[in-house]
Amino acid sequence: EQKGGDKVKPGDVLCGIETDKAVLITNVEEGFIAKILYPEGAKDVKLGNLIAILVDKQSDIAAFANYTGAESAAAPQK
Image 1 (cartoon, helix red, strand yellow):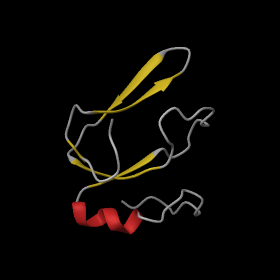
Image 2: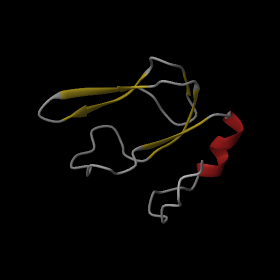
Image 3: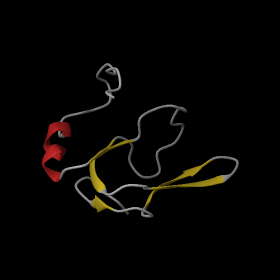
Image 4: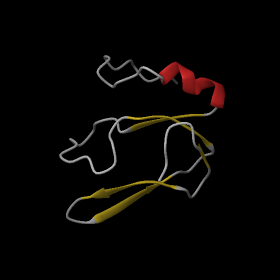
C-alpha cells in the first residue's frame, strides 16, 4: 500500500480502481507521493476527480500538507 511521502519509481502500482473492468494505475516516472486525496476503499469517486498528487522532489511534499482538493483548480503549468 502506497502512502504520502513514499518514493515511487516507474512500474510501481499506484492504485487499483474497480469499475466494470479491473484497472491498475502504474507510475511512469520517479517521484514522491505528496498527497492521497481518497482513502483506500473509497466508493463513488467521480470520474475526473483528483485522487493523488505526485511531485518530483521530496522537498515539495510539504507544500501539499494541508491540501484537501477543495481548493479551486489552477490552470496547468507548461
